[in-house]
Image 1 (cartoon, rainbow, N blue to C red):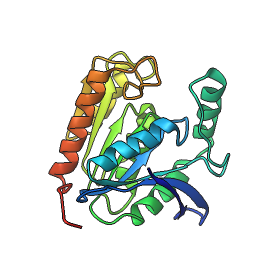
Image 2: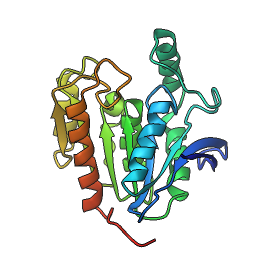
Image 3: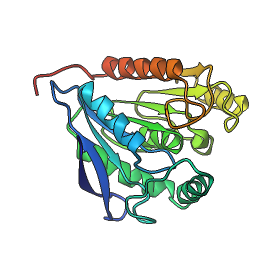
Image 4: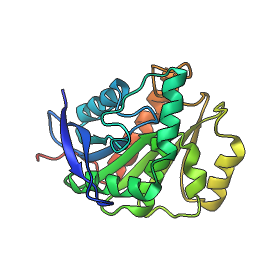
Length: 226
């Protein structure tokens, strides 16, 4: 089981909570794992534990702590509306500062992955943060807001072909602007990694996870004795 820690944001010095899961065996690296709009939920903590089993020390910051400490919502309509509102009220500069605090708290090599809103925040971190070896973003609808920024860390992206919230032209815009970024499309909708959602697709989730782990391994995420 993981633990709750505190991070001091590089944006404004704010202390936000974060969930940390440590590997039980040889360490592959550190991993910043960025939440969906729903906060650091049971699903996010389970993802942290899963990556820890693969050898990563994982930190999942509570990016909405300034708005509602320890926010963790279900998938009901009211919760979704609140999560959307919190995501729009959280500026990207602040997200970058919070993400950098998590990266600074992890020993190298450090990677980042994120889902939904966190998929766009993963792109942001790859573009603006220091000390990242590689990144993997999942169905980040708001990457289009950041498409003019260029990732400094190698990044791959995962999208669902039937994701109604991310039309194909948005994905094409990313591909045209960043032709060196590998983009993978799956026979699935939005949120296909989460078994709490109707769009959950086990095969797509498994394949995307394997590709993410291989990407990290190819960029320094090898087993060590540390």
